[in-house]
Length: 486
Image (tube, rainbow, N blue to C red):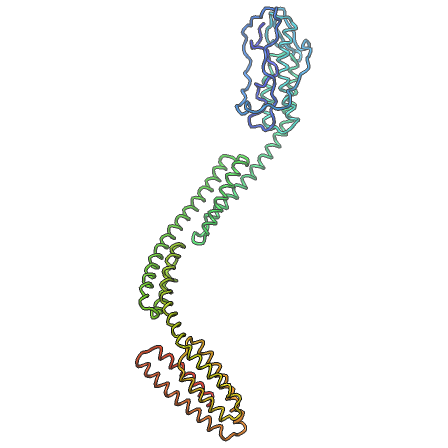
């Protein structure tokens, strides 16, 4: 037996790549290639070399690696090949194509039936592949463009194939399938273009956001938040690149260049900002360290160092930031230095308050005694009693804290005001003694004021700031009383 390709008989097989490796549709696997059955008693025919047909396309590794689909390969019913083939006396096999006959091979050592069956099975192999393409197209899910390419390649095998069968009909089916796939391919191309345009728009939007981040004023950027935004945009870029449609190479490279350049600008601004910030922190640290050292040196002055400490506090506020950790550490030292000064004042205040307790008690007793002023109907007697109380009130001396002294003075002043109101009412009734009493009280106040003025002059001459303040405060009270009765 000789054939046009001197190969063992193929049956519908999986060697031909019916779909590309990138096709998502399940691929149908055909049975493995098997040798034709031969009668065990018949001698093996000698193959005669013939030109081999065009090799079939080799499937890609991805296609070969796919799991077999559950759907079985198409089954072709047995045919009577005598309508399409004939055998010459010398074993030459021809196939009818329209009104013409074409030689497809030789089968000299077998019967005509065996020769037709052999070349008919070759036709069945081609028909199985055509049916497979038709079914995949009808089932949907496969790329119409890829199926169209496979149909065109398969037609090249059908035309001039070394097989016996309705090759013209098979070619016509492939032409019809190709026409149907052409329209689907156009729709696929339109959808692909739309998807690509949408992907370009989405990726461009990501790039524009990164460029907007890079264009911000570095001095106003919240860098922690902005860095998180940039990381999120880069993750979105990677996800889009992984899951989105493939963009044209030039477009993808152009967008990536914009993204990369904007990110580089952002990082350059960030590094420059923090380098400048580090330098500013360094200067602030030096200034604040010197301020702290000066504050700590005030400790020996005690309470008298408070004014200088307050001036240093103003310098601290103007020194700028040195970073949170450094600021916190230096501030702790600065505050501790202030605590020493204010602690000395608190100790002095505590001592003065302890010293003032007997004086507070004495004035409380005078206030109890002064309640009789309001009960005394004789205004002259009431004024005499109040004057006595006022004289003793002054003799008690200063009280600390000042808030306590002012509160006690306010209570006495209320009694004085009530008596003054009674005296004013009496004066309106032409009481001849009113003016005399007023003059007497006025004289007392004037004497007290003269005495306090002398004390103030002495305090000013000695430079005793505390005595000066106390004398001035007492003078203000006496002068207010004098104005009240004037």
